[in-house]
Length: 353
Image (cartoon, rainbow, N blue to C red; front, side, top):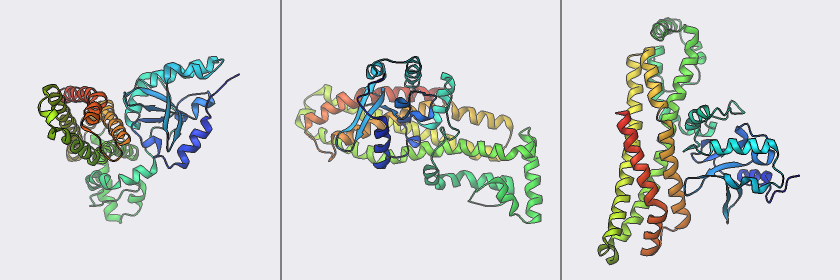
C-alpha cells in the first residue's frame, strides 16, 4: 500500500490552470509522462532544477507558496512500501536527473546516452505554440533552402509536397533538376529529399530555439546587472577588496558567458548559410555533428542562467534590497555557479574553435 503526502493529479491540474508555459518548451522542467515511468504518482509529476541546479521532484506548485520539491535521493520516503517497479522508476529518474538541461534538444542526446526511451513521438519536440513563435527566425533558414531547392525566393514553408504541387510546369522542371542535383550531392534518392529537408529544418529550429531563449533572458540579465551596479556606489564596497573582487568577477563571468553563447549561435547560423552554397553529404554531416555536439553545453548554460535569473526575480520581486542583501545573494546564489558556467563556456569554445 502506498502513502503519499501529495496528489500528483492535483499538481498536474494546478500547472494547467495556472497557465504554466508548456513544459516541453522549458530548459529546466521535464514532464515525466514522456519517460518510461510506470508508477502513476511519479508519472504525472515533473523533474525541475532547483537553485543549486540539482534535479528535484516537484511535490506541489502554488501561486503564493511557490514550488515544493524533494530530492531524488529522498523519493523513497514518500512511499511506505516501494514496489520493484517504483525502485526501477526512481533509478531512471536519478539517471535523467544528472542531465544539465531538460530542453528537448539536450534531452535527445542525453537520453540516448543513458539508454532511456521516450513514450511519445512528440515528447522530444517543441510545442506548436513555440514553433509558431520561432517562425520569424526560421524564415532566415527557409529562404536560402527554398531558393536552392525550387529556384524561388519564398519566405514561407508549409511542406515540401505542397510547394511542389503549386509550381507551374516550368518551375517544376527547374525544381526537379535542382532536387536531382542536391540528391546526387547528398548520395540519396530524390524521394528521400523531403525527409532530409525535415531533418535539416529541425536542426535549424534548435538554433532558433536557443537564440529565442537567449533573447528572452537578455532584458532580465540587464536588470540584474543594473541591480548589481547599486553596490558599487556604497562606501562599504569601496573599502572591502574581497567584495569588489567577487562582484567584478561575477560581472566579468556574466559577460563572458553571454558573449560565448552568442558566438556559438552566430557561427551555427552562418554555417547553415554556407551549407546551402555547397550542399554535400560530408558538409551536412559535419554541420549536424558540430551543432549536436553543442546541445548539452548550450542547454546547460542557458538552463543555469534561466534558473538563477528566476531566483533573482523571486527573491527580489521589485529589484530592491539593501547592500548586505545584495552582496549575500550574489555570494550565495550567483557567484560560484556563474564562475562554473563561464569556465565551462570557455572550455566549450576552445574545443569548437
